[in-house]
Length: 202
Image (tube, rainbow, N blue to C red):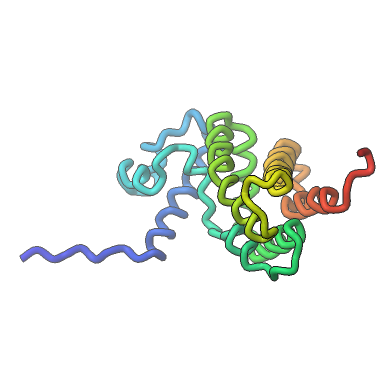
């Protein structure tokens, strides 16, 4: 009688995904994104290519998956109800970045640089942001006690998402080995503070 294979728990699955992603990012750095195939990554890890595709359905997913798994939206929703939308979001963002280890911060910097540099990954990232924008707008509406189609809700949600996207990509483009990227959370928080206070040029 054949033995049943033990099912992988979440920790094992996450560990494998991390191994695949870290190998992929290393090979992208060494050989280039376009020149590195999923088969090359699988061979380095010691798994079948189909295993990579099971965990990362597309090649850009190898870059976009966030191993830290900090649910920013959940922490935003959990902030005290008397906080304004931007105050609550800034607090959730700072808490999330503070919880990252040095290795996780370095990985985040590498991922962000690839998003900025590779059109295929950048396009997939924008698709992810578009999908997330609807959920974030709904969360902002709930906090503000308004409808998701309220003009103010749409404006502040769009402004926050736009600040995150532009600040991250700008930081990645300006980063070099001799001039490392500025703390991305600090750059985003500074931009959000300016949004919250108003702009002197307006």
